Amino acid sequence: MSSTYTAVIKQDADWWIGWIEEVPGVNCQESSREKLLKSLRETLAEAIELNRADALEAVGSGFEELSIAV
View 1: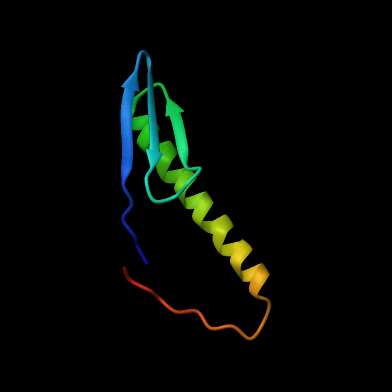
View 2: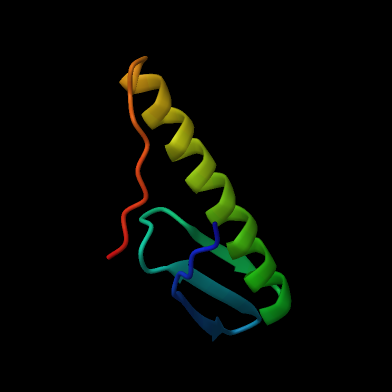
């Protein structure tokens, strides 16, 4: 399943900085725009996987997974 998120990026002196609007804590800083976008994608994927693992650990057994669209 593929989802779309919003990256907010800007150049600040010699650095590019960016955040993912929808996921707190996903932010990166890189020396180029291309590196920043790659880093944001990787960091977002890691954050989603960690959140998923935490949720599955917390719920234990006997649960149901559902897709929810907003």
